[in-house]
Image (tube, rainbow over all chains, first blue to last red; front, side):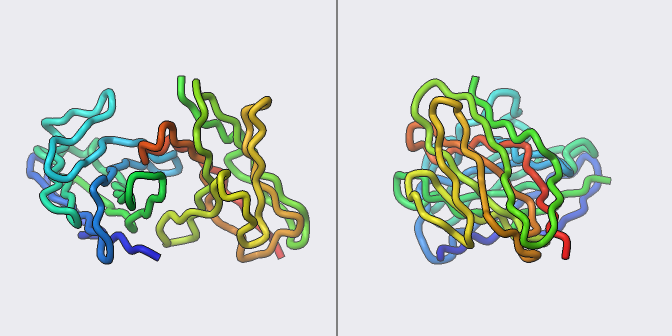
Length: 115
Length: 109
């Protein structure tokens, strides 16, 4: 099956700094990628939809200036958490869509800890 | 409102027992329903989608539009079925998924 890779898998950053998480589709082109956030023992919450070559579409309540999403190529989307605070600590998961349907593949997730 | 509800956080059964993980949804339209599974320390992966009408690893799920449910069933649970199971829906072929809270299935030997 198709593979989606996230990097880094774990990152610790200091409060006030920015951190970038990458999401790559390794063996297919993804015109659409999605970013989710998951708190411990809770469900995945969709943060934004990332479309190649255009601005991301953010879900209600998600600060677009804080969570910068860039989808510069058909195989790469990045999520940058700007001016990170401890409350941003979470598990961030990306997914990528093949074609125009609902065939979705997930990355392995990235743990962010802000200290 | 679009919502997926999994009422059980934890379901614990013995090996060989039947399993039913409940999922109810709320959506104004005709969504596509999915079950995803997350084994320990692994990524989320698709288990079933209602349009496929297939059985994966012995699991089946039937969409009941009248009851707005998509319960996941398996007649005889195996220890390797122990995992976190998420029910999800997608509307209008957008690729966006709305997830339920997840149910941890624990199959005891």
